[in-house]
Image (cartoon, rainbow, N blue to C red):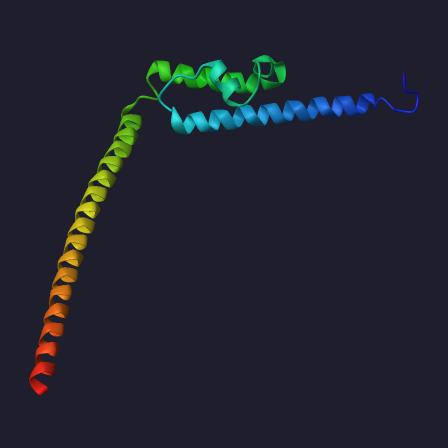
Length: 148
């Protein structure tokens, strides 16, 4: 055994434990916030929360200091099951995203059509320019022959 090394203090271990609790709770809340945006009208599984938060087990989620996280999940799932989350407002909100996507796709198609028309016009003008340059060269050579 190395007598020259210190093993640390119990205060350091307790501080590390508190930091880990805080970090895990923050990760769980970030996952809940993300799911509130992405899956607001679907129920969430507990595994989806703790694994999405980057935790290796449900131990932090089942701990007494994270009871408020479990309550938030259960409240959300209860509201979804009762139909509060799929109310007319939520369906209307989802419908607007669908409409926005449809409008953006339509705008993209219109822009692609405009781009293709512009490229066709450029190609036509380039061809006409090349033909006119050939005509100018032909006429210049004719003028040079006539002047000699």
